Image (tube, rainbow, N blue to C red; front, side):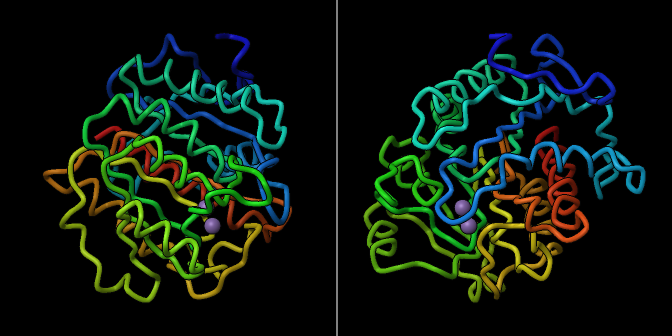
Length: 291
Ligand code: MN
Ligand code: MN
């Protein structure tokens, strides 16, 4: 197990190990996989870029609700992946690390990498919860049966998750690129789709029980998050996503039990502004997970 993780820099104030985890803590885990990206690579550098902004002197460690996350977040470092396309070994390593986290009672918060990391994460999380509901924010449904002959593609994780029945419900929010094939897949798996244009009418009514939140930063409008591989105009604002997380965190019949922030591509970023969005969402998610 120690060989499965590359420990964070000792100067990282959140640095810790599995021994530091337990109920009420949030385990931060970086996964630098971008080999399953279909268009541009670069998201492997995201965990380091998010940590840089998380610990940037311009901000602090409190969520908007006032929760101080200093003693809540335990940064385990990065999963020791080979970052090879369609790697079964990498996927198994991610699942193994996340299973170890879940076994401690801590809530996992994964920083991608591309969106392919969510499937191996859910292989650990899904079986640990009854009736898991996934809330997935993205421009893309990521439901391709296979993309460029890669069933582990970042365009396919939610097809794998639904096939393996790793959740009971999947609600996809901010979608604005669904192809006929992906619409068929959404119908086949009984997925709830909330397009970007439908978002203002959406309410969280049916989202309840244990909830996993997966945030692909390209679900945001590229005006707010330009540091992603796929610029898809017409997306959500940062404010809308934070308010959605807040509404989920305070909903009486829902509990956020795990989350990821994926698809930051620091090579496309402008002055670290998207990395700062990712760091802000990391703080808000950590506060929601610790509630
Ligand atoms: Mn995605
Ligand atoms: Mn996307």
